[in-house]
Structure formats: C-alpha cells, structure tokens
Length: 220
Image (cartoon, rainbow, N blue to C red):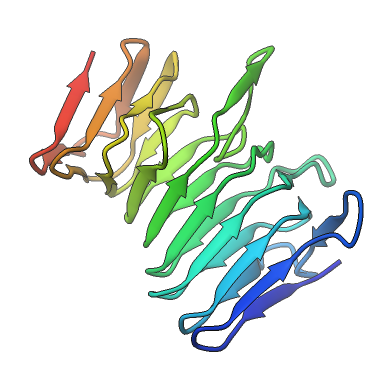
C-alpha cells in the first residue's frame, strides 16, 4: 500500500499506468483519520490509468495551472466494511474519465472538476465520476466535457459551486438531497443546470440557497 504520491516540477508530465493487463494501486495512509494525498504541485500534470483501491480517504490537491487526469481505471472502496471519501482541493483541474464505485462520497472544495464519463445505474447502485455516494459542493467549478451529463448522486450543498461550460448538467437523483450550509450556485453565461423533479432538498434550519450568474437554472 502507498501512503501518498506527489507529482512535482513546473511543466513536467507524469503517468502511472500498468505495464500490462490491469493493475491496482492500493492507498493507505497507515492512520485511520489521515487522508492519502495524491497531489500535483506547481504546473506539473499527471495521468493515472490504474485502478485505485481506497483503504483510507483520498484527497486530490491539484495546484493552479496543473491538470490531473483519472482515466482507464476505477476508484473502489470496500475496506474493513468502511466507506471511503474522495476530496478535490487546490485551484487546478481534475479531469475524471473513469467510472468509479467508491461509496463514501465526493467533496468538491476548490478548483475545477471536468466530467467526461457517463454514469451507469445497476440495481440502484451508481457507477460514475463521483462513485456511488453523495456529491458535496463546498466550492470550485463543475463542468461536463463533450456532452450533457446526468448526475444521479445525492447532492449536498455545503457552500455551493460554479457550473460552467456549454454542456447541460442535470442533478437527476430521485430522492433526498440536502442543503447543510448557506450555498450559492453560480451558473455561468451559456451554461445550464437542471434539478430533476424527484430530487427533493431538505435544508438545515436557517440555511439559504442563492442562484447567481447569467446561466440557466431549471428547478422542476
């Protein structure tokens, strides 16, 4: 198991890929309450094409000017019957092309997440960019590449986010979502977010939702 990976060096590019077949990278910080870090610094770029098995929560800090791409593998978590969470931090860009099954939820805190994969749902279980758990929006920017996307994860608005790009994003879950902190969704010009009719939000007492930006919000 690996505790952390750091990609360094302005303008440098890195790739983690299997020499043949399918390989799994097991991530474990060695301490229950400490995240594994897979990070880019400066303007380094990284591409990871192997499966990643989470035995600890995973934090993906991506510096401004950096790109981290996840493609060709998947992120899984089923360790000691405990769910594992993936968080995106830093002002850089995370591009997700793989369909993931981790169950602890995805937290967008800063920077940009680009989604370039369609989800699948089998017997109610989601396999997609954000795994099978909730999608928590605490900051940053969410965009869909190449085509419109449906996101069936439950949504937790915990600060909000920016919706960007010309491809429509739909929060398509049928069931409960939450507003746990004052949140602003900024929808940029030319962008569109739709919240499906069955996606019902429950708000923590006193918390407010604000829509900003010149883009389109359709709340059914």
